[in-house]
Image (cartoon, rainbow, N blue to C red; front, side):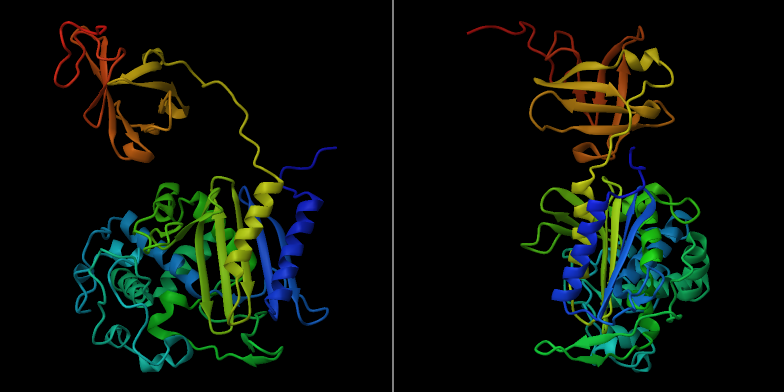
Length: 458
């Protein structure tokens, strides 16, 4: 008997619940709930609690803090895809009068706008939103702390501006836009701006004694787009699938891939971590890339990580002010990936033979560097060095008969076939580089020409 592809092995499930149990025990968490998705489906959920016989399930709401920022970024990307704004637009174009209108929308999304990390005192997460009714109250007298566009500096006020941007362009509240455009469409019925029972209460755990203190749950007001949301392990799992695969009803696969791509330089000395457009990017043990977001508000901490390459994601929610749910979620991904490596797709031939493409395959030379060109699905090609790492790249076919680079050095660069007057192939042009069938062959279209005496010995 074989195990169904969607089922986790009993040993994997045991390892997952063990990791969760250790996290709850050593982290002294009132409760923790987690879920794992694989290849688009929830394949495991688990929980641990300090209340005997009362374990939360994947439908219990917890506050998710800054994971809210990823939802806000999705709304902004939808505006971009609809042509209502450009990510390079200055904020002033769509939301005038903020005093920081020269920063771009992309810089706000990637936390590189130079804005302060927090609002003026008192601590906004634990005080009434009535103290900051306007954007000017959020930004304060000195909103810019760093040169614009030069540094990744995490900014909660920056995402407040993005939420207000959504409201200005859409003409509805941030909450209404989120509900109608994202939550309802993706079926995230248990994600909301205000808690809906069943939901967990937020607690602080004393650092030196096993005692609890309830944390206040403030409505964040204008700061809501930076951290307001409540959600469940099941809903965030479905959101994780969307962030990995896209959904044309909300954002295309290309747009969510753009969100997952690092857009801001990492902080000095922290080269393992980066930030895309509303998504964190990190390297786990130098073996895999994880994307997602972490979150915290008084009484709650949360983590959501996805290994897109492995098709595995995990969510961890804790109702305590401090803890390491992001590390736990990353460990849950690692456990599944290492215990049950993803099966490769079965090889199958291309559906049809295009002889014009087939003649392009094989050996090509950039100067004296040897490359191999092979065909991929949907008329794409891959160009790979035959020695060393080099500048390998995959290319997607365009309607005009050229290809565009998808990764690495040649990402966004155009590859085209240059033909002689008689129709035969002269060379490949890739971003002005000439790839020829021979290394500096006589008569080849090599910039600067080829010595007429050709190759020689000493």
